[in-house]
Length: 170
Image 1 (tube, helix red, strand yellow):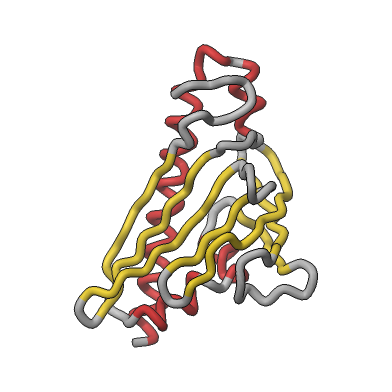
Image 2 (cartoon, one colour):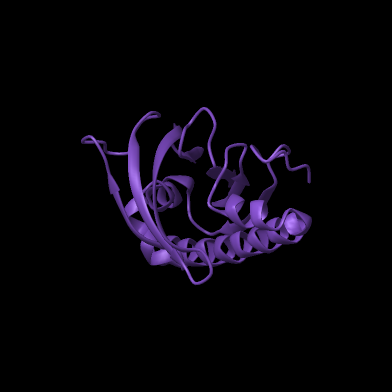
């Protein structure tokens, strides 16, 4: 991990996938519904579309309000950067050209079901985590490692919940 004080130079990423016994179109309905996020996430408390957006095309924005015991409460504006039904749904947090993170769902057909992958990329822009790294630059690797493990835990819970919803509908 290389920290320059301005960016996550190597955009650390975590990705997890699972098989869901439902067609991509069924799974897509869940992953592309940002209003479902507060039900899935331990951190995301509320989301809402901005500017009359409906989540059907890149460039549309939404606001998210989150909370974490160590990081406090915060609000971010995210922009859809991919919305290709029923294959990819992704949003960039903050500036879409220089995001603090990028979250992505990828749906691949497999037999009668879907392999659903969710990934989270940190950076290249600064995020709230940068304040901890700025204060303790010698602990940067540990700070990033711990946060990526938190992302991984959250992603596993998201995928399990989506799997349960989609398979219950099939």
